[in-house]
Length: 418
Image 1: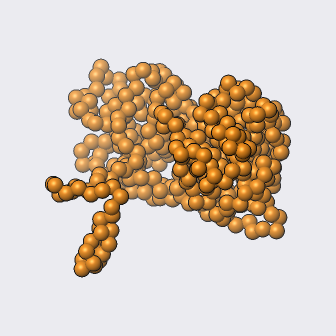
Image 2: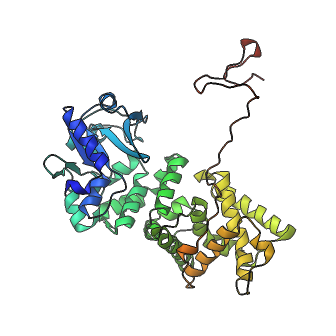
Image 3: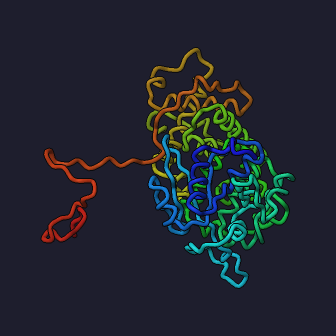
């Protein structure tokens, strides 16, 4: 590996740490991708400097995190380099508890930090001074052999943090590696442990999978090990062949579009994933999409989605986006063979996104490929944004001054007692 392949800002961070008397290493996925000849998305750095010491070296930085404290170093163009302190082996204390990981900021060596990491291929350290990869867990050999392997005992590692199941499957799908037998069996045996994880973590990992560019490969692996049905219980394990094929085909089209630069909203990806269920359970293509009966059908879908997706805690805007795409699909199917779409449909705000959803569905069935240069996606937000409260004319508050009511009002920070 050559320094010319490493991001210039990442090199700056490592050299400044070294010049300040500390060790600095490129770690994790950046080392893995460079070794495989890929362009890394992120360059993370580990050092023996403590968070406070790192903060003093880089004035353009901040400390974040509760469980593990990290330092983010900021550069132009919204570029962020994350710097972590090498951590100890405390998680692997054989006499310790197997509960979900507690807050932990104990510091350690390169070897100890490597054994804390999830996968062997992500536990490699690159020493920029002598161009050497430090490998304490057999990660280089697994890269050569195309193997995904948990560091240490896979069952224990999953019990400590069940989200590692999703990370292992995602990495296997992204780089087309095979999950080694012990890790694969531990994944199948510990799927119930995902119920102990916060919904927000499962949701965030799911979106990483859907946006990875390898969502179809991810779904296939997730179906094979049972992870897919663990996340979406309304898809029974094993899935019916036609349902499995429908999900994989839909996501394959999404992967192609994303690879060609099309940014697909999160609710759009979720709707593609849910479409085979809706076609089977709701007889979607025969359902009404206009008038009072169409309104009632949309309300039925909202109710079903609230029940099915309750544990994943999607936003109201995301669920509403899914409903619109599913409810309007029959209209696009009904008018697809005509010379032009009806004017009432063309005037709808959802038309561009609904048309893309229909075209994606048709390509998944073997129809004409969607042309990326003609894709127009509406700007419906996936995240709900609260507008700032209006202030009275002529009044202005400093950004650092809290709105404190008088003591007689019986409240503080803008909230009155009832």
